[in-house]
Amino acid sequence: MTTETTSADNFRCGYIAIVGRPNVGKSTLMNTLIGAKVSITSRKAQTTRHRITGIQTYDDAQFIYVDTPGFQTRHANALNKTLNKTVTNTLISADVILFVVEAGTFGPADQQVLDLLPTDAPVILVINKSDRAKDKATLMPFAQQVASRFNFAAIVPVSAKLRFQLDGLEKELKKFLPENEAIFGPDDITDRSERFMASEIVREKLFRFVGDELPYTSTVLIEKFEQEGDLRRVFAAILVERDTHKSMIIGNKGVRLKEVSTQARLDMEKLFGGPVYLEIWVKVKSGWADNEAGLRAYGYE
Image 1 (cartoon, rainbow, N blue to C red):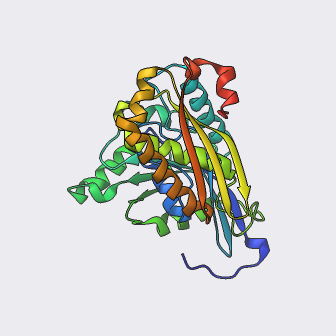
Image 2: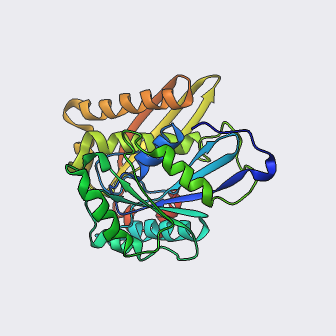
Image 3: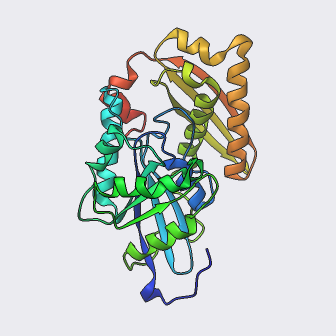
């Protein structure tokens, strides 16, 4: 996006919450907006489990995007209650909210998220995956149908994957950001540590290569993260609830775990800008997802 040089008095900066039901493309949207992969993606619902911040800075504005877990209604364990609390807490502190829906689809799960939205903050309706609409003429009636349910500040159809209309979305967003000095440095892209990003990358590869076979209750714990010059040594443990889940991840002769490890290492090297030594093992820890104290120990807010 081309920007004009402006005085510090006119600089805009604020937090933008990205919310919606699982699998509407929230993480892809944030990654594309900031031009870097800081929030993991997969086809598996509830991939995002933490409040992830992505930062994009221009001459006249700093956009601080906050990707949230998809609001979950299917499971009522401690993990999902914690994730849903993360969503509601993020909404309270946001300057602007992006409510993301999938073009042509609006169901009870979307409505449940819509019901959470505050009325004292600007909410922009983002209709994602609009490139997939077979008949573009249906987009307008669909937008009107969703708009009748809430007083949106703006409506923007986009395709996060194809970068369609994202410049237009940024222009709309900027109108609602408060006049503030930048909170982060001009080169910052996230407020998360490399250790945290390493665990997220391993978890993404786990979901991608094990897919729907893998139960929802699995997570990644970085047990050791060391740096020697440009080299980073990462020791990660994948936590699962049963021995059968462990063998599922390891795969025949360890092939699947090796693939997860190789692809995770390549992504880390790209993000960190240096060589990575990565070692992963799988541990069985029954009931971890329904233990609130355990969840806090594993970094769930």
